[in-house]
Length: 330
Ligand SMILES: NC(=O)c1ccc[n+]([C@@H]2O[C@H](COP(=O)([O-])OP(=O)(O)OC[C@H]3O[C@@H](n4cnc5c(N)ncnc54)[C@H](OP(=O)(O)O)[C@@H]3O)[C@@H](O)[C@H]2O)c1
Image (cartoon, rainbow, N blue to C red; front, side, top):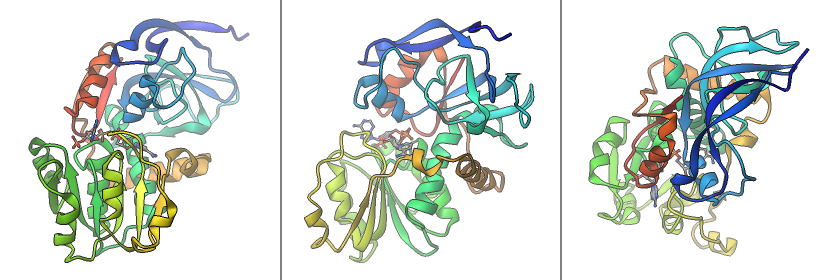
């Protein structure tokens, strides 16, 4: 017999949208894994800017909710009909929302087994950001050897993986960062040129570096005012990949403007449709594990907080104090 609830754990719960203080550390009950599900004990939870959008109300979410889309841990119980996963397996996942907890119930079709060589805690800060880098570089726009590309927030969580992977693909990478303190970090992840926003006009510098040609693709997870400027960094028929808006919403765009700017392409991609099937999810994870295990992308977790300190972690992320990937440990 399956009971409705069998176990309690500590989690972060949002009862109303707002600042980091709305992240409350509470005890919750976790459902017994049903058919096709497993109970995962999280060893770490990944912090993502997406969590800020949902917590603050910039993206709608029905309250109360448990935030978080990324985590990794060990299978503790398996439900009926689960064959490919066993108690003790090391696993990671990127959806659905609700990872800010000590224990989570997950369907096995959204679960990824971690290969030897990938630490569980590293995986918690790697999977969502790394799969994002995978689809952006290989499927939204296919980066080729010899191209010069522009990556905004190069020292950020997704940014660091994007830059390393793009270098592995043979690209020359121009990265922007928000402060001089992040310059070295961007250089360490392979940026050939680093532009410090606010100190330099990135449009002019990109044209200097590319001898006036512009770049074939811009990866922009920052949005806000920089979006329109980024269009001016593109070569004719270039592709603007607006995959996030940490600095504020992407402004409305009159598509007529794309013609005179050079017949540009603009896309606003999201991870979900790129990993909608279990097959796509596993293929993306495998491509990511391959570049990590081959040493082309390094995945050290840069910042660690206790899960109970999630509010501090959110505040630090929003204040641009963090670089690289961040985990919360239950
Ligand atoms: N579409 C997708 O599939 C997808 C998936 C994952 C992530 N994302 C997006 O990718 C972006 C990066 O995500 P992440 O989790 O790795 O975060 P992150 O890059 O670690 O943090 C965001 C970075 O944005 C920069 N930034 C510029 N202006 C900012 C402002 N006003 N407030 C805060 N940050 C500002 C900061 O870097 P500097 O200080 O160096 O400027 C900051 O470190 C986010 O926009 C996220 O939503 C999209």
